[in-house]
Structures are given as structure tokens and as C-alpha cells.
Length: 636
Ligand code: UDP
Ligand code: MN
Image (cartoon, rainbow, N blue to C red; front, side):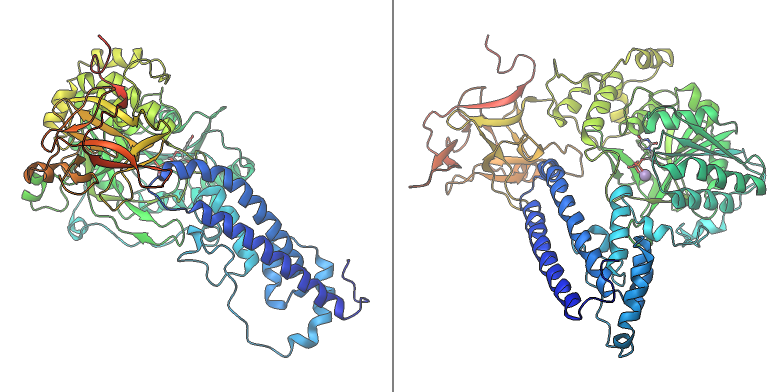
């Protein structure tokens, strides 16, 4: 309206100039903010905290930038851009007026420049979206921020799409009995995109034998997206018109987190076997038959299907190698090497014995109930998978990964519902430690750098889970480590752990320094894992977090005896090479290398106001480590 045809001809040019200058200014400030956010250093957790605040500011700038851009588009709108602009719901009439105005120029057909990348640093646009117009990029980025995956693309892909068959070739030759147990498939969701859920349902219907698929149960964990309410019910109705009674939906009346959502799915299920899946999956060819026939053979096996990855940006399928599922002492799940005896079988289709599960699972419904389904005391995310893995092994069952049962799972770029997963995982991990890990539970406390007593973390009531353990007469964690998960190495000699400060400079901590690299430094204390130290009664100092699995070695502090800097070496190598890796240290005293007799101290270079970490002749400097074990380091 404002830009009517009657305006003098030079005015639009002036406007464009004005907007261009503003866009450049806003982009410059935003770019500066983003480059600040990417400052170097190995401190990812700290960056995550800082970036939350900066995101706010950058977000505002993006809005202003988008506003300017919309306005400038408003002026120079061309035929090719009309569709994109419509997606932003720009008013209709001015478009037409401007188009008429510009008709003459359009006919000259200058070659189109490729669209400018609006979000060159966004993970969404690294491989995908190079041909999107700027306005489309804004729409796609907004959806990506909201969901952590490419909803713009998902909404444009068919629900029914072919997937590469990623099974080992011999799976294709397997014959499965017609007479298998029936299956209920549970999909849990909290604010997932509708097209994603519909594609999951479609893949399940298309790739599961209909005589075995009893039902698909949707669990809505109190989503707030409107389209997941009435509109989703409409879709369910359409599916049920074709497949009577197949789809069910259970809605939580408050947000309960993924563990409770999985339990609700189990509770609602009626078939012999229940598969509990994320909502952003597509099941692959013949996924169900291997699961159902294995559970028919042995109803006490909990199955972890093999994940392949649907890339969050272009939705291409990446095949993952088969692996066992394990965890570290913080109880983050991870992939483990397959046990030797599996290779000896020379059968790619054979089940892989697995210490734990990743999350998605299938099990005999009754057996899962008998051993306590999942721990409903878990909050939001994490820990529940390790808890089930342990409980299965300790209480009369086992866990297996089936190479022929493949599920494509969309790994998000970020979790929109919880920017920092670690608080939930830490709390839930302490529950697992307290209920299941006996004398090894300290390892979880060390890994999270939490004091053994009065941690201040409320992990909830675990009494009913302890009772369950007793009632089921479950084995000990010691048995589990020795028989099921020997790759997990307990550290029995740790006497002090956490950050380390020198009394001369209390705001600074020992830090593992730049990675890759092997020079520890003094750095402003932030308390995240690069600053976690572990002192052993046997004299070793681990630096920068606790790995403690046989195939990932911890890093040890050493003194080469030469030069003035301490050196970090892999502990196993340090031991093999006989490096000087043992230290005398007591709480509040000096850190003295047992061989070189030099001390780990801090010093200022000539004229510099800053302390650095050095090896030098002892001057009696004192160090404190954050947490101590039992009586070590305590005043008598
Ligand atoms: N989810 C839920 N409630 C929550 C958080 C997540 O129901 O509070 C659902 C989510 O929609 C997804 C599943 O739980 O279907 C697993 O979450 P996610 O995919 O984020 O975790 P992953 O296990 O893949 O890391
Ligand atoms: Mn998931």
C-alpha cells in the first residue's frame, strides 16, 4: 500500500539503498556475535551455557534482519520470488502492483544470481538448501530451530518412500515362520512434526506383516503443538478407515518425560511383543520378523534393533555398522565393539550380545512387565536405557542387538525440549547407581564430579526399585562387570577428584589445555570435564575427565624432567614407557613428582600479570582438590 504506483521513480531505489545499508549493518553485528560464540577452546559445556544467552540476542538480530529483508523483497519482488513470499504471507495487493510496475524490466531477463545464504553457519545449510530462496531459507531455519531436524523438507517428502535395505546380505536369505508372536508398536512423542509421525506410521504399516501387526499406539507426552491435537486425530481416523482399529492414541495430561511415555505405551499394549520406538523413525525391510522369531525362541531377551541414521538435514539414510550398546561411567550410552565370540560364529545374522540398549527396544510384553518395565522415577531423558540393560542381565534376562532388524532413526541436530541434557542424565544416572551398582556406584559420582555425600542432587525415591531388585533376586553389579561388561573399568584407588586450585590463584584451575595437545594449562575455573582431575592413592593423576573403558584410555599427568612444562600422556603408554607419572600429594600440600622431585606449581613470566602452570623446583605451593573420598584429605 505504502509503495503505490504514483511515487516518483527514484524513491524505490532510495528505499532499496536504505534497506541494503541496514541489512549490512545488522548482518555485521550478528556475524560478530556468532564469531564470539565460536571462540576456540575445548570447553563445549561452557559454550553451551554462554550460547543460550547469546542466542537470545542473535535471535533478536535475526528478526530485525528478516524484517528488513522482507521489506526489501516487498519492493523488488519478481515473478520467481512470488511463491517464496507467499509462504511468509505478505499482503497480496502490493505484490501485484509492483509486478505490473516492473513488468518491463522483467522482460529483459538478466541472468539470476544464486540465492544468498542467509544462515551460512547453520548446520541445516551445510549440505542442503543451496537453491532455496532467501525467504524459504528463513522458513526452513525457523522450523529447524523448533524441531532440531529439517521439517521444511519432511513436509515435502512423500510419506511412503523407499529406504535402502541396509541389512547384511545374508539376512535376505533368512526364512521366517508365518506363525510368529503378534506385535504392538508404540511411538512416543513430544512436539514432533506431524509429517515425521505420519511417515513413521506409514513405514510400520507397509513393512510389518499385517497378520502380526496388532496395533500402533501413539503416546503424546503432553505436546503443545496444535497440529498434534485435532489435525492428528483426523489423520488417525483416515488410517483407521483403511485399517480398522489399528491406530490408538494415549495422551498424557502433563508432561512426563520419555521413560513414563514408554511405560504408558507398554501399559496400553495388548500383543505378545511390544516394540517401543521414537516417533522420528522409519522401520526398514522385514524389521519385525527377526525380532519376533528371536523372542519366540527366548522370551527373556530384550532386543535392541540396529539403528541407521536419517540425516537431520537432507533425510538421506546413512548405514551404521552393527555394534553392541554400552555406556561410560557417566551412563551416557555409546557403541561398543562386538564380542569376539560373535565373529567366531561367522554368521552376520546372529544376535549380538549387548551390555545395554540405546533406547528403542522390543520385548515380550509380559516378561518386560515381570522385570519392572522401566524406572518411572526417571526424569525427561537418559538413564532409563542403562537401567533396563542392567536389570535385564541381572534379573533373569539378557540383551541382544539383531543385525537383521534395522530401524532408521533421525538423529536430531539439537534437542528442542532440553538444551542441556546433562542435568537430567546426571540425576537419572545417580538413581541407577544407587539401585544397581553396589560398591561400584562411586564411579558414577566420580564421573559426574558429584560429592559422595550430601551431593545436593535429589534423585527421588528409589525404595520401590530396590525392593524390585530384592524381589526378583537379581545378581550383583560385580557379576555384571565380570561377566557382561568387562570393557568397563572401575577405578578403585581414586582418593580425590574434581577441579584443582592453587592457593596463590583461587579463581584458576588446572585444565587439560587445547585438544589435540598434551600440555595442561592454568585456566579460569569453569568446572566442566576438561578441568576434572582424579588423584589415585597409587600416585597417578588423571586429567580431563574419566574414560575408564578398556578401549579408550585415560590421560595421565607426567613430568618429563626437562623443560618447564608438565606433559599429559595416555596412561597405558606412560606406564609402558616408564614415564614419570606418579606424584606425592595430600590435600592442601604440594604436588611433587616422585621421580624428578620437581613440583607442579604456578609462576608468572617476567612482566606478565598472568600465572601459568609449570614444573619447577618446589617452593612449597599448596593445592586443593575439590572432592575427597572417605577420610582421605580430611583433617584428623
Ligand atoms: N520424548 C517424550 N517426552 C519427552 C522427551 C522426549 O515423549 O519429554 C520423546 C521424543 O519425542 C522421542 C523420544 O521421546 O520420540 C526420544 O527422544 P529423543 O529422540 O529426543 O532422544 P534420543 O533417544 O533419540 O536421543
Ligand atoms: Mn530419537
